[in-house]
Length: 422
Image (cartoon, rainbow, N blue to C red):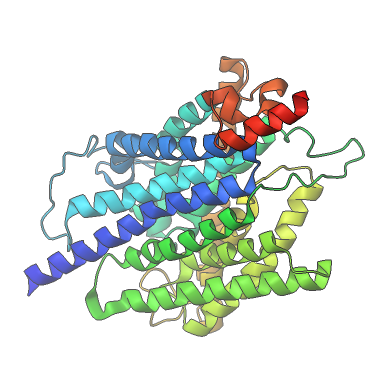
């Protein structure tokens, strides 16, 4: 029976890992659809490349820094260049667990790189992906998932509202500040222009793929088929996403007079991000509340950053950052005594402020670390490389041509060029 459970756990987690990796396809469609046609091929190519590069970095050092032994305050110090060795008694194949965790590391850097959209050199993506995978993501993942100091305090983050989403969002914030807004985004009087994405259908399909992939992200984090608990986690996940989409639709309808499609899509993603920390710790009704609040929060967060001239084309700061903070804090309110397998029950279940305090400390410490270190990396890169942003001419031309020498939509773009010449 033990051998059967080992095989079933390994199979389930491998399926979940595949779902998480498939989320890269969702991010390609989401970012390409949310940006302009002249950058679509660049978005697709750099996303595949950076995920591959992040995988290599995770194999070399990331896994060891997170889960290795002989740990210091920041990271573990063994298991580098993972050999595929199987650890006995782990409940599932170590190789499968490695691939599953690799997928999370790849998603985190993909979120971070959203802050570079439409204006960064390809070389900046390369260097930042490597350094983020060495000195940003592994430290936070070790603190929470690798037995670090936040784990010792009972920090609740079942599948990564903090580890993956907040970390990626804070790195994206550093990038948007260093790179500055895209040409034409803001006017001299402080007003903003809508640099609309070229394909809302792509964006919607991207959100759907991410929604499906999130079942691997959250339910897969059980890394076990025991009692089919992954079904409960999946239920909480999809209800939060649905509630987020509904809340975002309604709030945009009320405030703007029309239901805004990007807001609807961001609401679904915000619900998914928010429930990621708490999906295994809260009752079903609470997942709906968490999603509803996330849907409203993402609408106002996007407007907040826009007013402060922060140019965030794919809404990484609001979807992954603001919703990641809320999702992390939500367990401090809603975690039940029966489900709190990590830490304590939340405020609404007699746990007092203890767990909420731990969650808050986690948000502040991890958010600050990710932002400060990412900012330092990007600032140093900017000085050393003579700038990490493409020239004005290259940005206006589009990164498809300036960085890669061909268009993602060659027939359409060549036609537009011909029209402009005539």
